[in-house]
Length: 171
Image 1 (cartoon, rainbow, N blue to C red):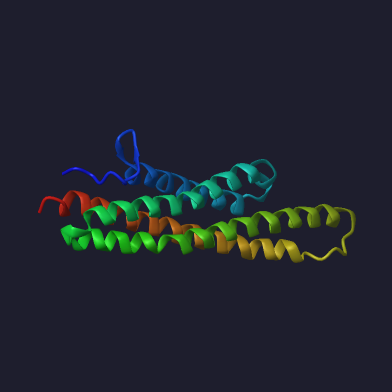
Image 2: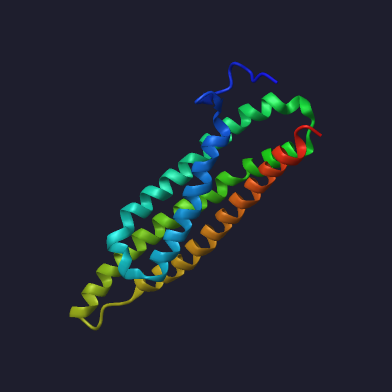
C-alpha cells in the first residue's frame, strides 16, 4: 500500500510514529520531574530550568503529533477501522491535558520561587506571612494531579494506537 505523496515523512517513514515518541517520553518525564520538584522544594533552584525545558518540549510536541496523526488518519480513513477512529478521537483530546499540565508546572515554579523568597525573609523576620508557601503547596498538589492525568491520557492514546496497528490493520 503506497502512502500519499503529501504525507510528511522522516527517513522515508510516516512522521507520526516518530513524532509520537516525543510525547510518549517527554510528557511523562516532565510529570515525574514536576512531582520531584513538588515533593522536594530544595531541588527547585537546581532543576527549574531543565523541568521547564522538558515540559515545554513535551507540550509543544503534542500539536506536532496530532498534525502528523491527522495526515496519517486521512490516508487510512477509507479503511473504516473503528480502532483507528478511537485512537484519533483520544489523540485529539490530549492537548487540553498537556496545556493544563504545562500551566500548572509554570505556576509551581513561580509559586515555588516566591515561597523561597518568603522563606528567606522569614529567616530574618518571624512576622513574615507564609502565604506563598501555602500557595506553593496547593499548586504542588495540582501539578501532581495534572501530571498524572496527562500521563494516563498518553498511555490510553498509545495503547489505542498500538491496538489499531496490531489488531486493526489487515483484518
